[in-house]
Length: 285
Image (cartoon, rainbow, N blue to C red; front, top):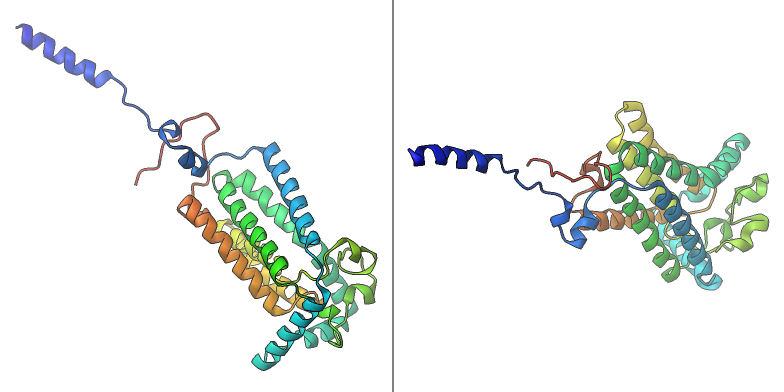
């Protein structure tokens, strides 16, 4: 009788013992860094501000190797002629003949590069906090490797080529905003055209919007944005189309870094994460 009364009680007690909950406390330091977490607003604002300041400082501190930059521009222009793809001058002259269009492109080049990129970061922070850090890592890695390109391969933009016949549309139409023309040119490295971060950043924005937006028209605009940016950088004679290829390669590097660090592409990570301090229960396989 003793056995029949004690055993069920013991079994009941064993079943009542709570099982340990898996959370971040059992993970290693690196694993905790990799785990998706809710971003802190103050930290993100500070990080973006310091990172952009550092990027601008390093980019503009690279020696302006004018002679080498012009030689590289001549080489690219000749290579494009051999490939039969030297269309930049035709686009530059054709668009420059339509005043309202080229003026709009000048302002597009000077502003949207920053406005839309920051807008996408804010959207990610608010609507996709679990994917924010990984997607931001793509952008930062892309920009970081671009600095290496500026140092190793100084390149003059088409508008600064000797005898290239390109039109500096900002100077001709007296529009503001270009850090590479007029009175502002002394504040910016004139020979950092390769790779094009206008393409790297705009394609990052476009792919992010296309992957995560739920509204069809927004997804289509996401794909359209880098395509229009390519037309703008060529029409304003700020880049060769090969500079855009350089920007795409830098972006591919950025995605590779994020993929290796998080073990997945940013867009496949959880959209939402629990508030800081709460246990993270992994999703069921």
